[in-house]
Image (cartoon, rainbow, N blue to C red):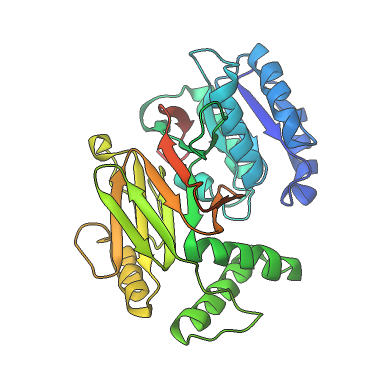
Length: 325
């Protein structure tokens, strides 16, 4: 038996320098079970083995793809029966949105030390939280949906792909890479510049919410999440599951609409009042349609095609560990 199980992907970028420290930490703590995988395909067998030691907390140490694949396998694999462990995520990916939502920031070893402290002291109160997962499919019966917690589309997906393919290869720190990407997006959007070294113009998409209708156009931001934190410094309105577990935000491809969204996000008023060009909705099913329009779910790319929309629903809540109570 182990209090905590740690699932690590040595191939993730963050682990290239971190893993020796992780291994030393685990060697010094007998109540943590460490399992390393070399490929995403090994996550299923890894969780089957981890279930045998019945940990109270499962910690994911890897990039966004590792987190997304682990959440998918946790939901579909059924390795822990009706009593899954609390899930924690170390701040070790490029974006760390899930880790940030759960209060895991800064040095991953310090976050792991905090996890062990909570596990040894008893998990109670505000440390245990529940989050639904986004379930992504093409709407065809019999397929296995992919699960995650944050989806970006339209101009946001283009910007994320631009950062991944054009900025990250420069070897700059993540923070500086994100600043350069934001600057390039603003040049493209505000000044209307069209150069090969800038992000492309977003493709038209149509987003449909059951019962709320549809919104169509070109959007600089398309976000669907079940996290309590979104982008732009804003938080979602928790505690309103009757309105739908999926939180949607769309921002028209317009400098003024983006400025309104930025100001509302940083002032904490996003979604509380109607704004021209900014759409904030909640729903239980969302369809995204477009001609070769990309979306990114926790680091993995999917593409809507003509006649084959991307369908988003939500799962039952999964227990997570929040480090900052």
